[in-house]
Image (cartoon, rainbow, N blue to C red; front, side):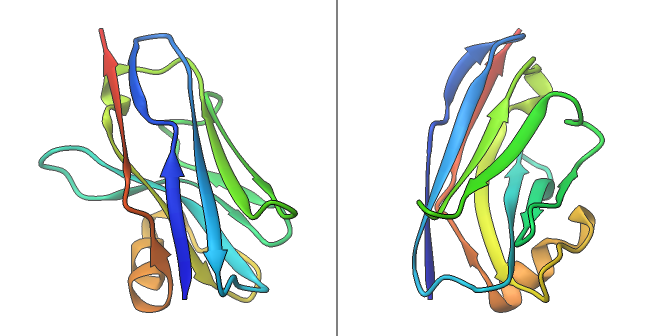
Length: 130
């Protein structure tokens, strides 16, 4: 079982930056998709960004050009650099991972494989004030 622990959330003013980190431990997957989802109050959890075993990335349209996902295989960590933050980015951010053939499904389909075969972190709050 993979364990995921997030860090790096906090409060920032609009236009600011935050960097989220996720540390993976336990039985990590040899081929996988890892990523970040977020959930704002009253809304569904949505995929934000993902990266597969070979480093290919996916981003939600709402964050393209502002967020960058990256991974460090040696350290088993996943990061999300968030720049030009907007109040609508306010949400609980979750690190997630699931075993795959080495590629990530579209972000709109990310929840299902995570819930079926993967793992979630406990979440970290990001609050952006205007």
